[in-house]
Image 1: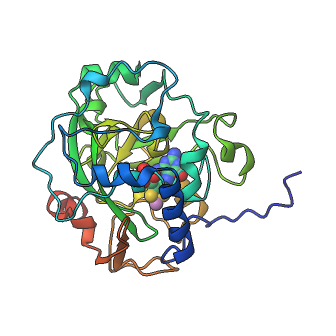
Image 2: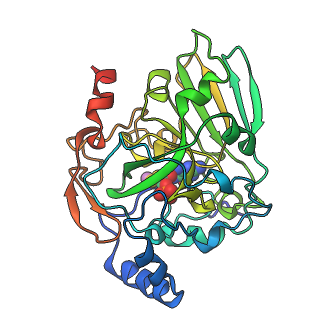
Length: 323
Ligand SMILES: Nc1nc2c(c(=O)[nH]1)N[C@H]1C(S)=C(S)[C@@H](COP(=O)(O)O)O[C@H]1N2
Ligand SMILES: [Mo]
């Protein structure tokens, strides 16, 4: 039945810039929905301000973590750019399990059940672990960090993430010295994620990986929240990875398993198009994607073009890992 569909292997990215009409339509949509006002109200918001969740953030079960948000801002991580408007970021998402159209993801996540949610840490560890996300956020303190975020498609945003250093989470399971890599696996629920059912040419579930020195770098975060509240589903609720010196796809959303391995794990985009998406995928303005330049990026919100920095501006934290 689906064999008339030609697998579009490398279909990931948008063109260099999103066509103007898509932006115009999206603005109209936001205005119609009355979201323009919310957008204005949250520009430049900080921990302690009134953080309002986008409409799509509603969870199926009561949220037991309201007391944890907003978490204390870690002021060590600062950026030279304004925060991206919350409602812009929440309506422009890469989450292929739901749709390949960024503007549609937030409309399609309604049936996705993100509570309760089990996370498993397994593989080369002394203490294999299975716990719920609601348990995890009571085990280790949450903090808020503002990071730049750079998608391989050359758009960028700046958002406050809430989470736990990934290193601390891994330590709960006591990695063995033979562990050299970390492999992440996202959820597999075709009944809740329409594109997992229909886009069968992808190798669901989404999987990613990195070296253990990268995963335990102080910048690597296990993220549970954004803008001072829990992650809305379209941002990868209830648990995702953020590694701000790498292209966005190295941060898998809605993960269910972390595995410590000796061998380098395969990764979703690298398997689909190895010549376009490398295992490391560190942000590098000097290495163009085969189909577009990586020298600059478009800021979500004002669409300004700014220069892309090596390691997305985080060289002082990570460059020594690659020498
Ligand atoms: N499971 C899963 N994780 C994913 C993706 C995806 O399609 N599925 N897309 C990646 C890409 S390409 C980007 S740019 C970011 C987008 O995150 P955001 O929608 O929260 O901005 O998620 C990454 N993680
Ligand atoms: Mo991306």
